[in-house]
Length: 371
Image (tube, one colour):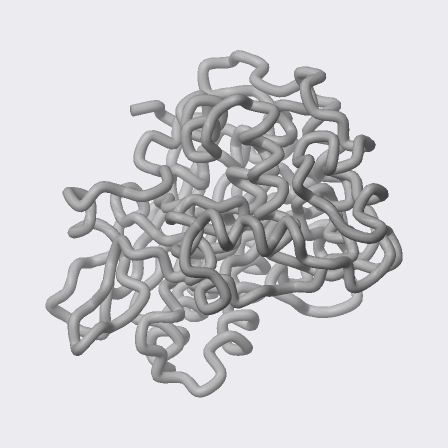
């Protein structure tokens, strides 16, 4: 197991973290959560709250062992990072048309869609397709995405779309010469030290997987929540990754070290990390979301304007602040039988409160946590 902690600065969560996370449990937003807060070489806080399900007799959340279906965190952690690695090695050109890598990506105007457009969500593709109902197989689902016509001219507007990430995943496969899950495992997860994480977890791991739904009264764990990812076989550029809180902390530390792995090797050049996390149009970076300073969102109000992150539909989020040398991870299974009528909105407020509390914890740490 790769160690990521130089010192455990805070053994107890500050009241503001405790209060925010426990409020979510008490009001029925989620049955449990994991919070990990830290810097590039130190974990300040790693704590589990509540249980896997609403039953007090179900498993207790553990930052090191509890596996989450992280949903759209797959986009930046797996797919975008794989693309960043390939671009850094000179194998993938962001300015090249997607058609250069995926010849089947045909249709009016699609010759102008570049890899950068996919990363910035400016391809012109709409946000979503119900592949689980439109297609009967993974091959048919892939064909539908490749043949989907543009709704806008490439570059004309930002439209967050799962289709962009699906296509980017297939570009990674075409360039990397391996399936997305194999490439990500070999080039991202293992080098970064994310030993517990991956796609399509085996049945033997299911007791440690946080459930995302109910079927005839039984908790469902290990079956991917995103139905489009399921139709694509459980591995897709937009969803499918399972990860623990401390594994995601290892990834955040890799990013804060600007591409340096836990063993000190430069896995990706600093310039590549800076390129992919630089603010672009519509509060987007390349594959990442930038903190919107005009509102109090899931990143709160205290992280710097240079902060980048992402959220996942199942109830997950990661935010990384390179100015402060700080990351904050909040993992929940909001989709598991929520008892709150507006769980998405409520979770957004909780995420913001935890992010603000993380800055407070960083301030208490003092000089030891400064960049």
